[in-house]
Length: 495
Image (cartoon, rainbow, N blue to C red; front, top):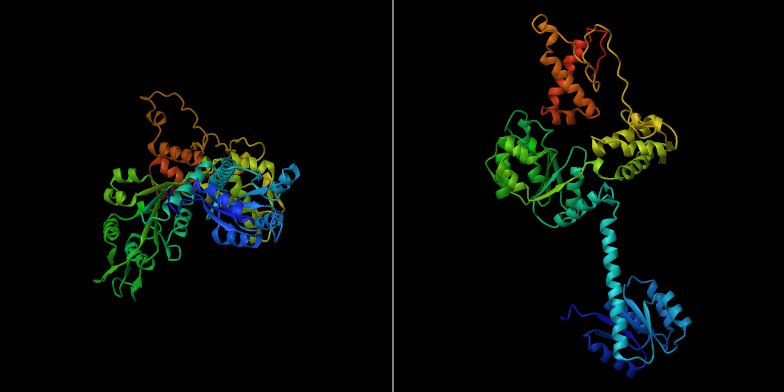
């Protein structure tokens, strides 16, 4: 056993002869023994050496051993204490155990008895430390800005802890609203770069023509409006972390320049000729399937493999057990404080509705719902009738009830509204009445889109994802339908 691996025992014993005997016993197991002749020296030795165990004689010249036990209880030492007593009474042993001792041993005793006792208390001490560490890892109900104690989130916390100390690139995936930027911030805060800048860029929110300037900066006169030199995110993040959110939205040409930047840590500002070098750790995220984007040719394969070193997937809220209630309760308290409201808890029926709903918009949607409730209502308990749509459908018994759909007027020819099944087409003779027998593609498209939006509880970006079109396409079509419907007052407008 190496010097560093040896267990340290502080022996507090006033009899030098007995101390030599005990030290000889413990030498058989290669313990490192620090001897103190009285109580005060013993406490100093514990403070100085941080032992694994303390062998304490209860009868000392300057203070009683029970007093030493009480003082040790008020200190951060995790040493296991074994008391030595010449009095084999049960009362003495019980008093010592209540005062914090892990075991006791009665004089006279041999080497085997002493070594067995020490081995036992040290093993129990190690087991307790392991259990405590395990409980800390698996029972955390929050981490950084995350709230949640579900097994899915415990796995995320562990991945963050393992990834944070490294310089390796982390690729975070997950649906919109699951907290990808919070994950990136947590990695940065746990990393050796925590005291350096954390710079985030949303690649989907910045116009393509400005994106390169946002990342690399520009020099004066590089383009219209460039009235002075400007540092980009790459320069601002030097020494720290650069987080590229929605990386799959990045333009193909800029992906090429980003790949070179990642490989060489060098870049040039837009319109500049000077090569700059920075030390940056890259984190990135997307709500898409990056491999599918590679297959579709919209995301470079070599950039994907350069970035996809440590993948972390954030689970949707619907797969996080009762985390939704933990988050809702915390948000309620925080928002009530911000808004000067008295809300303090959720009614049971409200919690049932929150737990039942699928939350397609994840935590971001939950934040909006709780904020809506706090702003628009008064009271100290959130009642189920305060829930906004679509949660009001779950408000009483946790069972979803269909939304009320206004019926189209007879003869109006209105398309079925969102979520309502289209009525069966009447039988027609295709040769004599082709116009009545054939449903137009435009009508089929509208029905399909409106039904998808209803299935996704009004979440248009999610519906667009499943339909395989962009959200902008759906918004544009719905605006067109609204204009067409406004001319027909008999048809319900669904926008």
